[in-house]
Image (cartoon, rainbow, N blue to C red; front, side, top):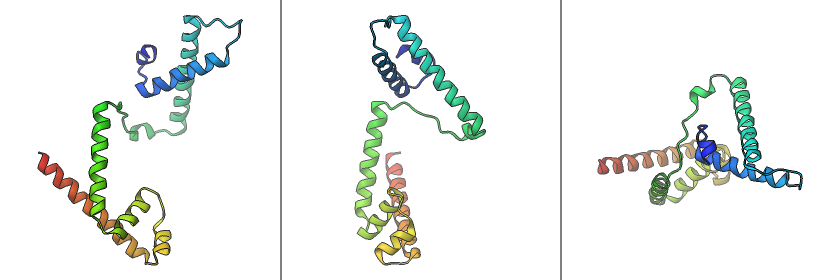
Length: 152
C-alpha cells in the first residue's frame, strides 16, 4: 500500500493494484521465479506504468475531459455512514409519494427506462409521465431543502 500511496494512487485503486500484483505472482509461480521483494516491487512498478500509459492514452484521446472530471474522494467510514443515512432519508421521502409517481420516478431515474416506454406500460401519455417525474423531483427537492434548513 505504501508503495502505491507514495505515488499518489487512491486507496481503492491501490487495493485493486495490490490484488493484481498477487494475481500476477500466482500466475508466474514456478520454481525458477524469484519472488523476492525486488521482484514484487518490479511487478507493482510495471502495473503502475501500465496504468499511467492507459491514463495518458485516454487523456490524449479525449482532450479537455480532465477539466470536467470530478475529484475522487476516499470512501471513509464517515462518508459511508453519511451516504447510507442520505439514502435512507430519500427512501422515506419516496415512500410518501403516490405509488404511480414513485414508481415512474424510480423506473425513469434509477432503472433508465424511457418515458415513452413508461407511458406505454402504464397506459398514460408521455406528458403525464413527465409530470409525475417532475412532481417527484420537486417533492424530493423541497424535502431535502427543508431538512437542510432544520439542521443549520
